Image (cartoon, rainbow, N blue to C red):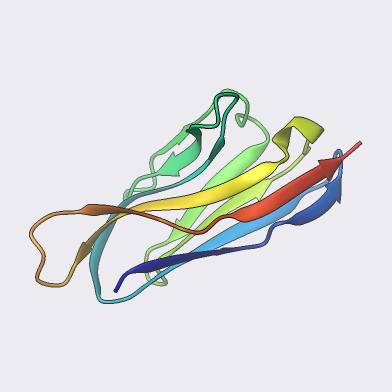
Length: 121
């Protein structure tokens, strides 16, 4: 069974940094796009950043210039380095990945349980 587990959240002062990690485990054949999401104003999960297997990236406007997404394909991990954090970055951050299991024909989207980031003034 495929599972995504996030870590690295915590409490930090405004202007500080955090590094989130997400590990994919299970009987995995291939991972396509990996990313980080957080709830938006309407509570729907909104994109923070994504990274494809070829390491091409996409960022929300709010993350550009402050956050950097990276991945380690050999370890099935994705990271989010968050710098210059603002109180409005406070949220639960969810890891997401498109994963194909061994013997499966299609990719399926998986979500982690989330890790909490709190940024104080």
